[in-house]
Length: 251
Image (cartoon, one colour):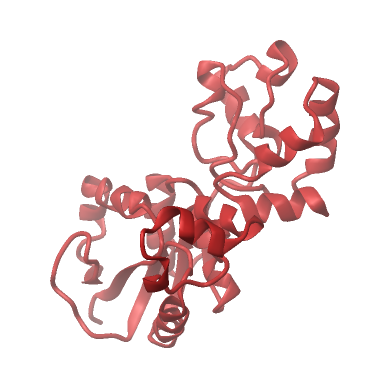
């Protein structure tokens, strides 16, 4: 049995999640005998034709060409994993979904007539069937390795399903919502960052997206009691994972 073909694809993104893959140097060596990098332009010019056993997709879909390309990748991939906030929720660029795209294009580009773009920035799963999603901005490299290893072994990856609050407790952090009256999305955000921001007395920004069964209504009530108005709450939820958090908050 030959090596599994692993491909990494980029759409609209900052490349941060791809850099997280490259940051897995030592860990990738452990599975090097089982994986062949077939397509990963951030790392190598070498391209091996599909079909692919595993495709990791970074970035959101923002153009008609992107929408066609992701369909072709789906046809040539046994397993597709959307990695990062852009691929799973549209990313920070999805903030344009709540505004006039023509106004944005005119403000940013000297010749907007040359720009061809969709009106919205959407997640990969809005266009194709995605087998797995890995959240984060950027993704957690340990989660990446676990996901690839699990896919190779044919088992379900062991990715934390609890919230950032549990990570705070594991680190011994004092809750910034309770002790400091700070706005914090930790109670409704998936674990993965190690409670990085609360550890330095900053509220969680929700980089890893909403956890399963996130109780955004209860958190919103508490944050309002702490002084946050409706506008502030909407701005909190409209960040890295705007489309997913806003859906949770509005439901």
